[in-house]
Image (cartoon, rainbow, N blue to C red; front, side, top):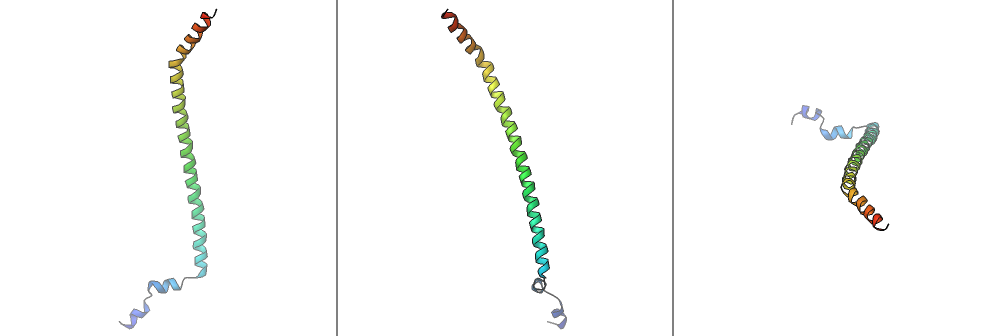
Length: 87
């Protein structure tokens, strides 16, 4: 090893020389990043739930209307026949 090798800093030297202010700045950045990630994730989740609810509402409405269209005539016919028999 030559004398010049001692002048080259190694990773552990750089870590040991880090200032406490740098820790605080990184922590603040992480907090802001965490808040932004959480807010974005919640917005996406809310949008996805709203879309799913709209889709489910559409499916249920179609199903109910299809059932009413197919069964309503026989319901009305049965009630009319029963009503006319009782007169």
